[in-house]
Image 1: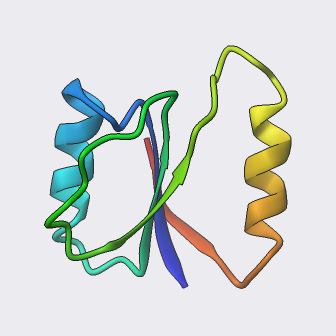
Image 2 (image 1 turned 180 degrees about the vertical axis):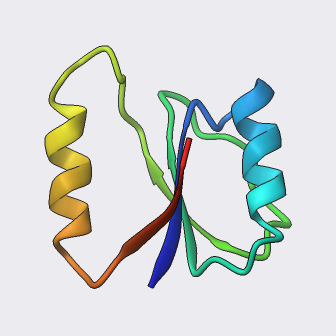
Length: 77
């Protein structure tokens, strides 16, 4: 399963990048942000991780999620 992982995707540049990646034919977009963004209308399935990247525990959460399935990170932003 091809995924894109985007930090800060709930607004601004991160959101704009998420909109662009929505057209890349990915299976899922994993968005990391403290706030839930408005991803209504996206074609790609969104998986939101409400994490603060200044807390180092976010790495373990993402790593654990990656081990849940056969995910291949195609984009990391």
